[in-house]
Length: 287
Image (cartoon, rainbow, N blue to C red; front, side, top):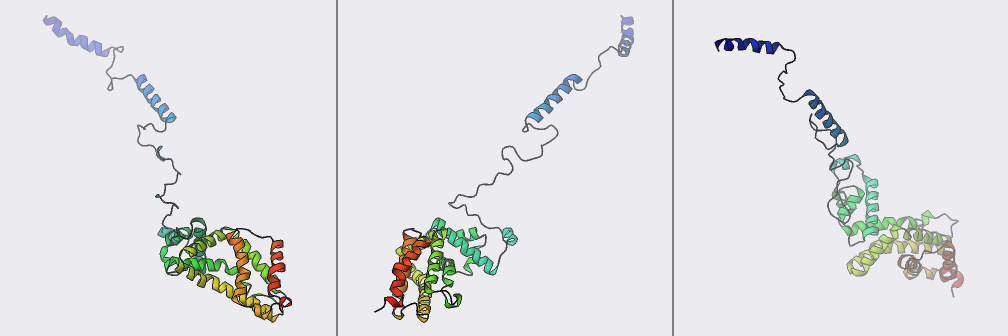
């Protein structure tokens, strides 16, 4: 027995020197199996971008929120978004350019949403400016609307001023040009803006008085100036120059294009002038 015990180390030494003996592995997993597992992980990563990487998080946008999609704005009928300070600096406008942008935005808001839904905030958002820029120029919504509409209709009426008309332009030709230009304005979105304000004036007596004073009276005066020019040229009777005649000329046409949405052709305008307007004001029709 003692001989067997003393011979055991020799046997163990012989075994450790045997090249066919299986050596111990730290991970207890064959190398071929490790390579297979690694290959499968790489295949899953290529086929499914959502698969977590063993080397760390993958770069790029999250799968559940693709890049490029807009962030929904807060609930609201118009999606009004405040103008950031950075945006203001990037496209800062001043003076006439800013005022024109605000007036244009005001008319667009009137045409799309009506006077009752128009707010200073909505105009500022559309004009890409701040509310303070509007309030510095127009203390109230009503003043802004009156000014915006006044500028809208100034173009066709400016040429009614004596200094804007050359001597070879007759009263009839000036009236025809005015009617064509007003009809063109009323046929577009600007006409819807006018209708919304007109509707408000029928509901609100104070607003109606302001609308009459700030909008209609200056244009009526311009039309009277044109008739007075016609008297000096011998094309209009002196007794035909008053506000009633001016309202008759403008009212018939405005009722047609603004209320009834009937936009006359140039031939129809000529017919109105030759059959009704000019016979009512020309010297040959007097007593």
